[in-house]
Picture 1 (cartoon, rainbow, N blue to C red):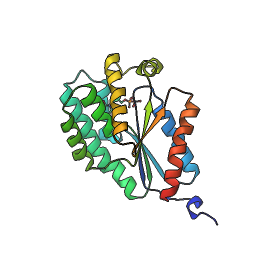
Picture 2: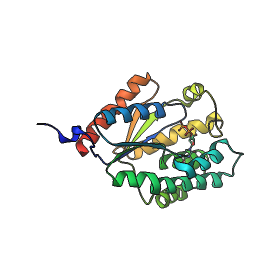
Picture 3: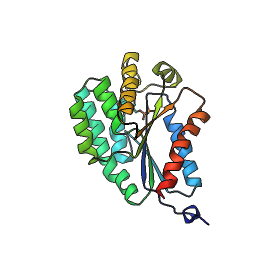
Picture 4: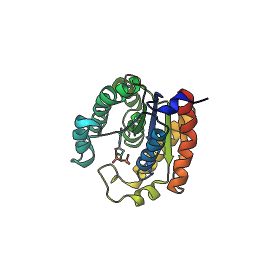
Length: 214
Ligand code: TYD
């Protein structure tokens, strides 16, 4: 039987987020996985936080390349970016039945601003719910890596990359804690191995899910 889904213009509404500490190879993997899904004739939207769209790009500049910010202000800017990103890019793409691959999302705020920076966790969770209108990913891939290795892979450092190692260790722990609390949504990937192996691990998770949805 010919699978009509493979003939082109296939829809498989699914929201997949990529999370993890710095230098874990998320962005590279995301680009490769998007191509593979497109080869299966799926309609895919790739996006990222912070910084999708014109508004997002301005916020990204302030957040990553601007002067030191009050942590509360930092958290609110990530939420402001997210609210606009969800309403202008993510929800419309999902409503069209597309697969959305997003490089960082609400879990980054919870982990970086609350777990690592120490801001109120209930507020961060409520802020995420408010900003996203409760849009939770179908799957979240956690690229887990020792931050010392991740940081050593970076060619240049933005404002958050430049935080002390202890901060990045908290980030790693925070992600692992979140992943353990909801293993149905979170899939932990060992990002210390070769990039090709990391991508295969992601594909093994994504492919059956996306195909099942069609
Ligand atoms: P970016 O350059 O997009 O790259 P990467 O995801 O590969 O690190 O950096 C985004 C930075 O912003 C990163 O240090 C994580 C941080 N961040 C937060 O602190 N909170 C958030 O809510 C988001 C989305 C990102």
